[in-house]
Length: 266
Length: 304
Ligand SMILES: Nc1ncnc2c1ncn2[C@@H]1O[C@H](COP(=O)(O)OP(=O)(O)OP(=O)(O)O)[C@@H](O)[C@H]1O
Ligand SMILES: [Mg+2]
Image (cartoon, rainbow over all chains, first blue to last red; front, side, top):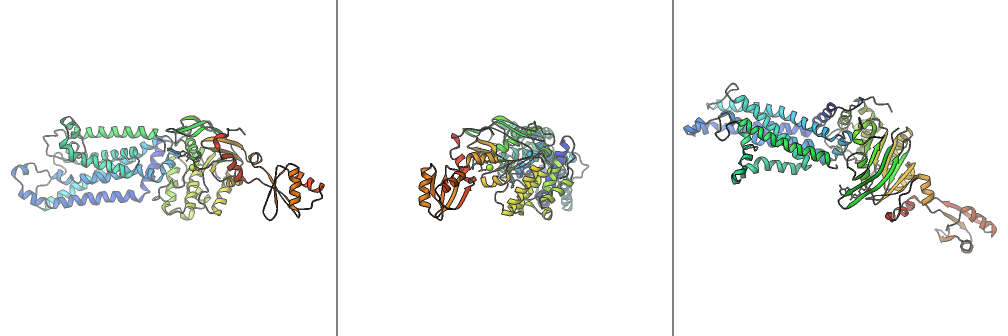
């Protein structure tokens, strides 16, 4: 057998490249991404098609609060789940198949392996999230203007902030999902937890005592989603602060994920 | 030369001690068979060697280092603990490529190990459709990627057909001949006898034997001798009188223990008994193993 010449030590770039090879070599990666765009843009097209009638029936106050940018980005509600599945699978697909053993034997420095997974998840989510938000905005505005309803352009105030913030929001959700996948180690459990976080808790938010309202302000689909609006919401005057708060929460989940990942037996 | 040194290795899961103060070494240039009945702690020990499980106590050193500190792990150790540990949606080539890239190994290694394991024809197929034998080969291909000095296989022949078993056996022998340290587990003694030079036996988490293969057989197989003669009854009486234990074998043969074939031959000559067969029976390996592990707890670890 030929001898293998290698660098004296493995670098983080090697780990990162390997995670990218793993990510791109699965068909499910690409079908999930296709699903993200089909469903994401499909919802925008459908939701916008009735905007003409909504606007015609709207009161003056409702017309003053008319936010065509926000309308065209509400697809985030479903998109966050699909991008979350992508984040979850980056970790849990290795547990489901037992591949995690093989991966950790090749890369026994566990922080490094998980960091590479998180970087891949973040890079993919940033790219997919930004592109989805931009295309959803453009599609939504096209549908609105076809119905002679006020629409927005990229140059309007607050629009780029909403699109950029929306892409970051989706990235944070993907990282939250990767963290949950690491802690829970099973796809179904992690997905159920993510659904509870983004849908169930917001639905029950009204029942929470007032001292928990601070949490609602930075919660996904709640305060943190204020970043999708261009017409200021009196409840959330500084939407980027709310988004920043959510990112801190996601960071806390990731820290917990790193801790358990490096301690647990596989 | 990479020796795997295991010292005082202990693993507890809650109240259960599944590996209990086990020490042994896997030396270069030979196949070390790691034998024990189901649940003996073989897989757990291998997980601790490869850093997948943290020992409760004790240490494992591979060429003097902890697994986690190996600078390029796949060039030092290749381990196959579970042939199913592959994502079924990935092709064999992509699976190996990701592993090669993760350790900075040249890409050509993927083609080389695919060739050595006879998987070139299915390199582009997704592993989910592989038979058990093909998955086993893919797992072995992964262990060979970094041309490692130490190899670890957990029950590599489980579920394989005779051709696959022979292939793995020959591979392990040739890896050892190349000077590598090879550790292979099994719960089949007969399998070990054909491939291992050295034997480590554990039962209920404790080390029972750590010895050369041939010494193990000599020490643990109570030898018997098969004898055929026209007058078995009369000869049996003389044998018993001379202190041997005699029982009837198949087709009116005698199975004698407690007396060597030399002495039996001499006794027959002395009494003028004509023997038509006098065959020392090699101790059945399976018997030796069962005898040893029957009540593992009563046995103390014994150095080679
Ligand atoms: N994660 C775990 N938690 C609790 N107990 C465990 C765990 N892993 C293994 N065990 C127990 O440890 C014991 C040893 O298991 P192990 O898999 O190491 O045995 P083995 O020698 O490989 O057996 P086999 O020949 O069946 O593969 C078993 O009793 C098993 O139930
Ligand atoms: Mg086992």
